[in-house]
Length: 117
Length: 109
Image 1: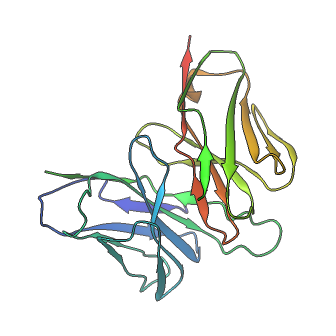
Image 2: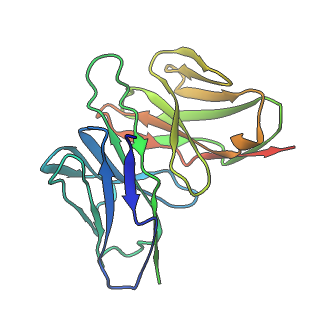
């Protein structure tokens, strides 16, 4: 079945450590996104990529890094520079919006919950 | 700045109807989405509105008024499984999604 797979689902990290969250999709979507979700807040965009080997900073990119070496994969690294990394991280993808029938709907992975100890 | 407003929490009774409102102020408008998110899970797509009016899909309907910067999601014949958060998101002039904080809907028997 086509979809988006995030791993790990739960991750614990000590302060000062970098961690990488995996996101893989087999939907053949061009665009991929990383969001952060905190209680009582809307989804906030960390990074997005509309094509292989290119990505753009979102609203809260500081302390995070990404790569897009393959269309299917968009890993997110949470670095030690991120001051408050404990959160629920969501990866999403969408097809390129061409034509009137494509709404640009996002398809989400199941999320990764990161806790810093 | 850009802003999406939704009620934080609503309570309704099984079998009843509930309307969840969303007002927005964004730089441009290229569509409005509603997503459902159960606790600890990923959001799932419910509806998309880009023109004014009502879109009906089974028990769920979504309404849009662009002139008023307003949308609502209408849920009929509520079931216990409808207990979830409902997220409103607007696509702005740059085709970036702006998200509301979500409305937590509690269904009581």
